[in-house]
Image 1 (cartoon, rainbow, N blue to C red):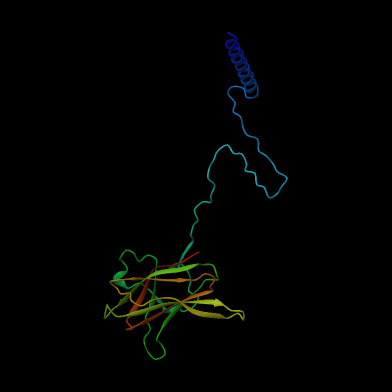
Image 2 (spheres, one colour):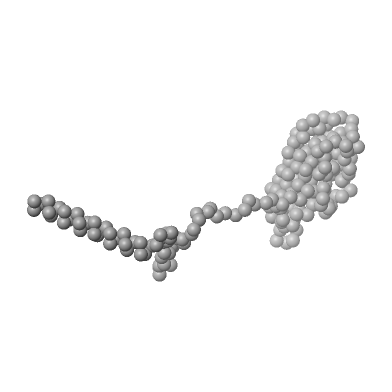
Length: 209
């Protein structure tokens, strides 16, 4: 009987303690409210304390947008006389809306290459185009198209280097042409042709920032 009485007394104490805990919690946090952790601070600047937020929403920048400038909308800095119109038989063909057309050189001793130059002023990162040769007398004649980039030197001049080239494009199989122009001041397109009766059609020739 004595052991039973002791067990009952211990059980009564446990129930009483539990009641006290429930009462204290109900007083601190009434029904309908949630306990919100309090942000802590530290006097040590090397310790970073995360802020308490109501929603865990990932933060991030919006997708970057790329600015595009088509050469067909930009004035040439030099070599304007080497630009011409799209051949008549292609003027009604779709896909040639944003093109520049450069005449082939005459291939005479002092006219072996046609050049057209555009100012970049360090604004762009890359140049891209699709090269489509067009010849009147021999459609499969060969054409070389190169992009030279000019970088400003300390003395104020320009140091030129080949940025890219396309040597295999044909009328049936246009090929891509690209160059890195980051920090460059000028871009020059040079055209060499097997025959003088052709033009270099640069489709969607564009500069990207």
